[in-house]
Length: 77
Image (cartoon, rainbow, N blue to C red):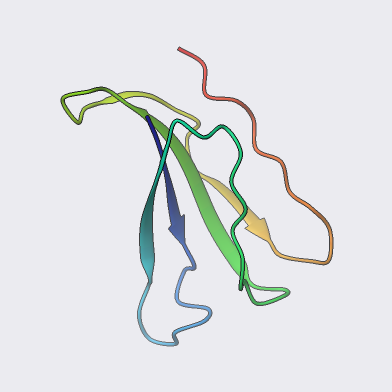
């Protein structure tokens, strides 16, 4: 299964970081919505084993949201 870790770096909630861990199951496509434009977001995609360990990770990538779509690289083992 896969999980997305989304950290808005405190841009939306001033004074505190908001980190969301989103379990997307076996989906290989997911849309993050309700992101404020021109805000910094750090995204990581992890492949998770059946016992809950991390099998592989994309590593963290920082993005500034705009009106364009964002595609992350695939998780490779």
